[in-house]
Image (cartoon, rainbow, N blue to C red):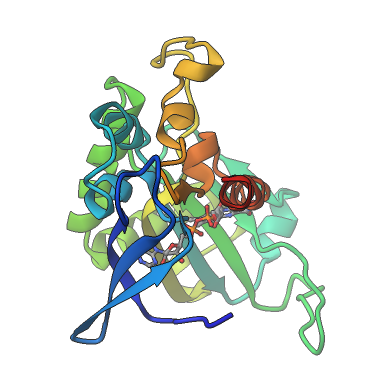
Length: 254
Ligand SMILES: Cc1cc2nc3c(=O)[nH]c(=O)nc-3n(C[C@H](O)[C@H](O)[C@H](O)COP(=O)(O)OP(=O)(O)OC[C@H]3O[C@@H](n4cnc5c(N)ncnc54)[C@H](O)[C@@H]3O)c2cc1C
């Protein structure tokens, strides 16, 4: 096996008609150069919405199905605070605030690994985990995800910081928290394409299994198969492994 890291695939096509193809041709970019390789098969394990651009010869209905799954944007933020005595005084570990800028604020999970030890005393510094799924209430879920992505593009760090200070003081000040004194550092991680799309009965039809966009989208196309959590319309790693297993087996059977 030869692994080629840092290569971005820009095209994948069956050599000959898909129903009779014995090989695929993959075009990838590495640095400023383009390379072409041939293989007996190829699994596209990237985001579903990119596949129609990489593989324009796919049937139109399949391309449309692949575009249906709009990833969910996420912001995961870490805030280092000088101590967590305010949490101790309030008797809380986690705050859930649906509708607020940060929907969830919690003390970092306790992890002891190798030489790393989590703080055990409230007098010690700790990281807070804050999360936000940018959205636009009132619109269908997939539209909300797209608008949330634009919000991530246009939000400055200063805005995130102000929202952090504002919400933490409103949540914790009665426990003695002072943002000017207690916040030591902030890291904002923006994930424009965070979680995979999961069907929502408020907005998505109740399709029979074989009509679901993820099922239509993951159909093998000659010697090209399709993995990624998008092809199961779920968001989690266990599914990514299951879908990769399916996609590899489709090639082995073909
Ligand atoms: C902030 C965050 C927190 C999460 N927390 C959890 C959790 O706690 N538990 C959990 O189970 N899951 C979690 N997930 C979800 C988990 O990360 C995904 O389910 C999993 O990574 C999906 O794996 P995948 O192989 O389907 O796709 P990805 O991990 O998205 O992998 C796709 C790969 O394809 C590559 N790629 C894309 N296009 C090309 C191209 N043209 N050429 C070459 N390579 C390409 C990408 O670089 C990427 O490496 C989290 C996700 C996020 C964003």
